[in-house]
Image (tube, rainbow, N blue to C red; front, side):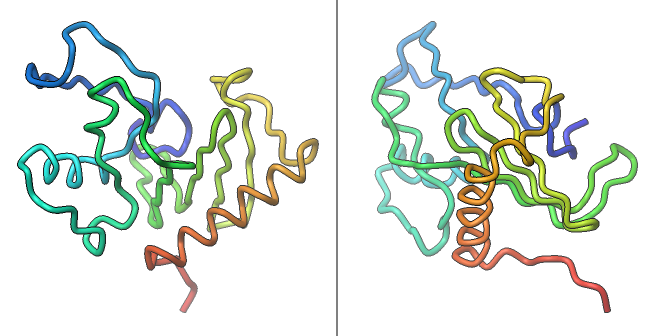
Length: 154
């Protein structure tokens, strides 16, 4: 269910073929998102970055070369329903091994340690409040920075 906020909905493989740069058979476990494609394609084409058009995307070319990318966290924003696949309005931040989900409908917050709990069965919101608070503040800052539209009741 690709509209879900859990790993089954957002964790998918990415295969890249770019013989000039990407070594055949190489792998990376660095999380990336679709907003990264635009700055990546700009760099691959030799064009200048346009950060005003891709505020939350970074070029993946350094990863292709076996280096690191300069990013602290990845974000997902899904401010609407998809009842066909049980997707609910929410935002997500993933930083390191932790992932926080902010549900807009009931204001619920969930926190998971993906290193220890890839199936997201153990919500750590109550037991790791400092991590939840820090990630929630980071998510709210990102929402503001990118102008994320938030659902509201009229």
